[in-house]
Length: 222
Image 1 (tube, rainbow, N blue to C red):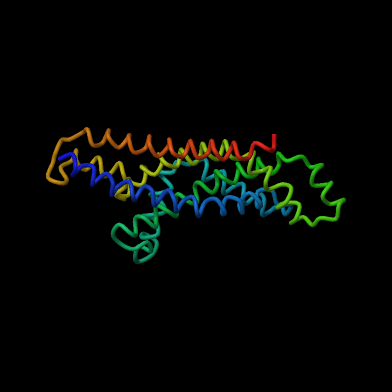
Image 2: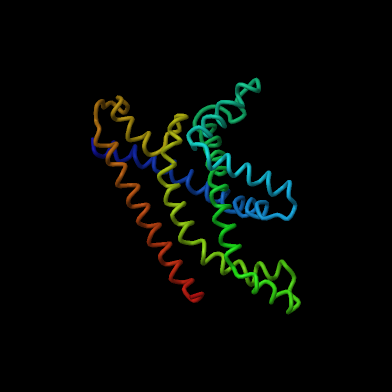
């Protein structure tokens, strides 16, 4: 029985890990782009971007996931995400990327605006372009500043992936809960659901060590 549980949880964890990775790959660059929009000197773009960020940050991720997965099917004749597990995964990835990109954008914005303006002005005096100033002066200092809050959000993302079960995506929590409701030939087993916590703890522990290493490597900015 234990082997059956572990195999099922491993499959669920792979789905969780895949959703986590896809979200990071999509949300990090999108969040940086959104942060530029939030700081734009073009007022309509700036206020539009900040309004979208306010809406996404002000509503539950679970509600956003339900809207993204179900509403297009009501509007159009067919669900654009497709059927089965792949459709649920795509919809989950889209919802998670949009949600976390908005959170990341505020972290990026704070990191960029936290770099003293005098350094940018010094770069202009030295004849550097704004692009050179951003990549050679602002970016590295911004990374140092955003690592602690970014690591906190990424660790939160690990646990938030469990929300995807609301649209029946078979992630880690779904796999553990399946033994409680009678899947895999077993019924009423609650310990597999609690055992999923071991997976989360180990994964978060690895990420914590990784971010600690990155912070030490960037300590030369102190």
